[in-house]
Image (tube, rainbow, N blue to C red; front, top):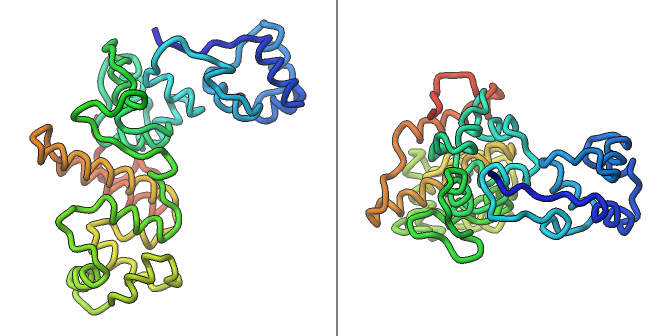
Amino acid sequence: MSPERTFDARKFRAARRAADRTQAQVGNAVGVNEAAVAKWEREMTTPPSEKLAALAAYLGAPIDKLFPRTGPATLADLRRDAGLTQQDAARVIGTRSSVPVRKAEGGKRRLADVYVPLLASAYGVTIAQLLAAQERSFRVDVPDPGASGDRPGTVAAPEAPAINPRSLAERIAFLLESSDARLDTTDAGLAVRGNMKVGRQVLTADLVAAMRSGNHAGGASEALEALAMALDAPPAFLTSDDESVHRVVSAARLLTSGVSGMAARGDGEALTPQMLDFINDTVAKIQSGLPKDQGSGRRPE
């Protein structure tokens, strides 16, 4: 059984009053009516587990104190704490059906590797924490990496805000941090490599330095494309303002660098061509505005 969070009506009512919120205000904050909140406080019903995190945040109370859990989190717990349904999670990984999510949560079939960083980002946890939660979903007792360090052989990832860098400077810094250690990441080195990639003189060391600092004015998309290619990243990561593109590319980048590092240590295999095709296809569809379940790319089952 999943160690779902416990709901204490009296504690919840006390927290609401301490926050000086009405039942109607609480309901509006989480998308239910006043009558539903009243029923919670009268112990007639309990809130959906996906709403507990939002309730705690709205009342300014730590979720682990207001709605404590009796054991380490499973995949379903992480999803609920993020306020997502299984169908929401399916949209995160770009599948029409929630079957991959439901089977992983039910201990039937583990998530495809390419889905792991996407869900870790959406759930606001590290990849190691998500993998540990997945093992618990399969009734394997493993410690929380967040409390005792990453398990050997897993890929560590930053918390959710870091996996979705927003500004140009943040995106470039992210690419630099996750790039191959053998790559010449000096301004001059990147300029030379970017120019070679695009086949013409586009970048200079000064221009690369300006883009790194975020001072480069938008509009010179060919320079951004060249820099992205110099860092072995899809040009859309730097040229597009679409946060969906940023999230998919950065999550995939973390998985690529992490799995490649594991392969180099003999701990696993690098990403398959099919996975890379899926990542590139997803980015292309986001850019073109097509639904992610259409097109030629085939998702892992």
